[in-house]
Image (cartoon, rainbow, N blue to C red; front, top):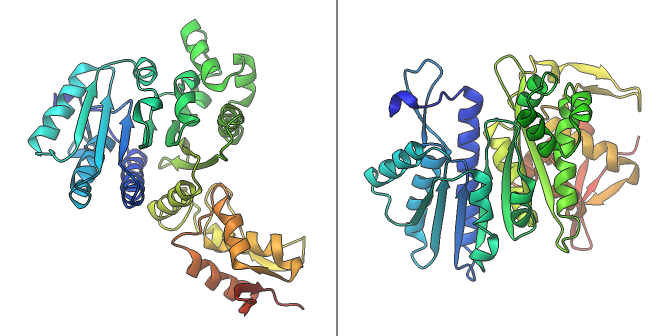
Length: 369
């Protein structure tokens, strides 16, 4: 079986770790609520739980086994809460191997469920209504740019978090030359547009990701509850964008948590893109005549958050931290949780701002020249 393991490149290993860390933090937050009865984790494309590294010299734990170990250990702290984990894969040997490894590791504190189905059929049989009064985290992680929106729709509109791997690299590489009918239909189903329209976008990876976000927004548009979408890019060694890992959630706390985990995952930045030190080079701002640093919109850092705040609010003279954090919480990339002290420090350093208390509220005051 081990000879059949897929290879995991560094960006994939980063992805495994990020999903595991988000699941851990998400589960702790949900299970810590007194009224919570339990959680449900669903991985509809789980693979066998293990991979080889690129040189095939080391075995790497994938999302499934990482999450299984994490939740099983975590359950010891919440003996009265149920944790159900659903693993599915189209290939039987992968599920059999994953099941055997879970048994070998004696992960017996939570409930594991296994299926061997096409991901779409599996999801359609797993309607969220099946899990009333439980929070759901669904992982949708295909190897190609293939997304079944009809199968995902009930979960996107339910009280759950959905993480989708948008395989941008597959589209930019394959859509232009697609001739087989099944391949064309796959792209059209994913992007909800004609193959000719997809080909026009295929060189614009930002536009492709925006298309995916807009499809999600349309799906949840009739939902009374506000939804939030965050998207983080994963790059290969050559700085090529491989995929974007998106979260759709109806809970602002999930949005805040996902951004925090992502930035920690990338070393306090929004991605692992190699910037070659350009972000520290000073440049002249045409807008206000100030000296600033370069911003890479595909790899933000703390300085960029401070620049965003200054540009948006400095003309107002002051703003409450409550209002400021409310804005940042809803930003698709910039985090607040875990970074408030760093952001305030950067604002002081770059713009000589001050923080005062006014009417019982913390206020950020911009310096007037």
